[in-house]
Length: 114
Length: 116
Image (cartoon, rainbow over all chains, first blue to last red; front, side, top):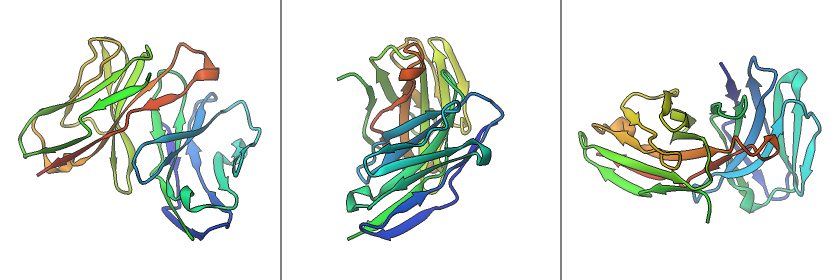
């Protein structure tokens, strides 16, 4: 069985603050893939990143960065200098590979205030 | 544009009515799936398919049927709608033949269903 836990449910920050969204996963498979999705108020799911279990290298994309630590089964997402447009629900998800189920966490609602 | 197309975008049903949510993809993806999204629950898997003629249950399959007669289409049927099925439904497909470098999921834009 696989599980994704996003313990934070709602986070509110003021614009330009940094914010970290936590994700903890569980799986017995040694090969797996972790994803982050953004769901803005318009409702669509926007893919942000995929990381496979063999690549623990952290990744930075503009104001976004991801910290993958297998030792703690965590894949945390940091937004630097947050902006109002970052307000959304963010989902962490786990898959054990092609043709396998994608399991989502319950999501974190991020509100960025001007 | 290539992608996952869901219809309708909005639907209101009366309790006991039946309907089919349509999902079609034109990317030749083998894997397709249906999720429902409810407040505070994230996205939960209803049914999935790893290819034409093959379907299986996900986490919350009760009240829903699926079939996969073609690679492109994966309709979700509600045989007798209940208020508990009020939700936002997402269809997703996954590329399995493009190699791990291209592995990912493409989501439709969602169907907002209200059962009264």
